[in-house]
Image (cartoon, rainbow, N blue to C red; front, side, top):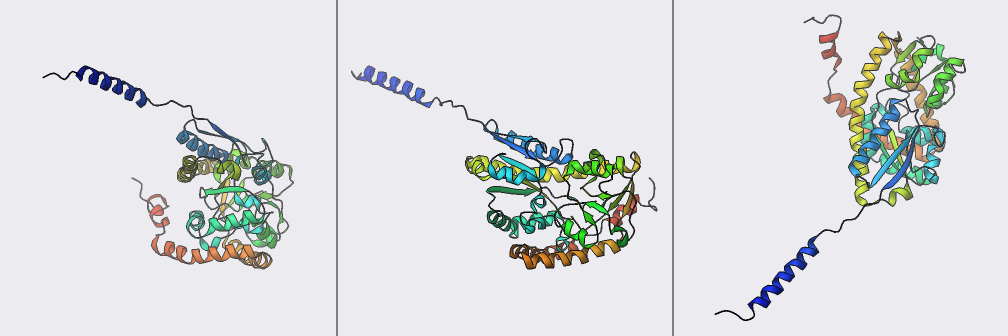
Length: 372
């Protein structure tokens, strides 16, 4: 028996299905792009500026069209050492540099990079920062100097050379009276050693060395030193030092601009920092080792190991500096105590677990190695 209401029921069902189909069509919206203008503290040709661009590209790629970070080189908007103030004021939305460059605002800031860090290497200092209380301490310092910024640390650097010299130094006495470029607490360490220090930005070092305004200088690594022109003005580089043996990079955001970002964009930035940190450390090994060979073979640079007597003198000077600064600045001592507690177990673990890889290297590449 046919239901008289069936045609009408079918018509209603068909209409409901069409309506449901229409409702299921997604609404297309165009996401608004947030553009952030960053500046690095490095010249455009320096590998450090390349690292800044690498970080920005990772974030931009992951964020799609929702976020775009543009990175300008040092001096494009403000001088290198004025980056923190510019980000704080909103003149820049963010920046790329090192914490030690803000040393003049609070001496404790230089402890993220300057000095022997109780035997920690750069990756251990980053571990302390992320898991040992360093991040909260850095936030406390920035709050105390009224810097409204969000800071991310990343990118463990290799041990930095003692520096470039017109003549190699073989003892502590030869350092006395030298006009020398360095930054951070290394300024105080070298002053203790009788050195006359001038804390120039990276792009100004080689011209000053060329004109004789300084006698010697340190910057950072084989790739940066080579492209900045150090081998054109000096042919002697002293390797190994405690003045900056555990430094890392800093990525800064203006806090207001950062807080306005959607939660998922903040997560992209966090994971972008971590990815950039790993990638930077891998690229550093590849590029620095290549440029080290080029400096020796093509640029005819003479490399010397810094004598142990000078290294010991640095540690003696460091102890004097931290004793003085710790007495003047409670936050300085607070950071030191935190680092020391972390280093006591972390460095003990590292020393006990890790082997001396020089034995393996010498076996295959040393003077007595068998040629295959």
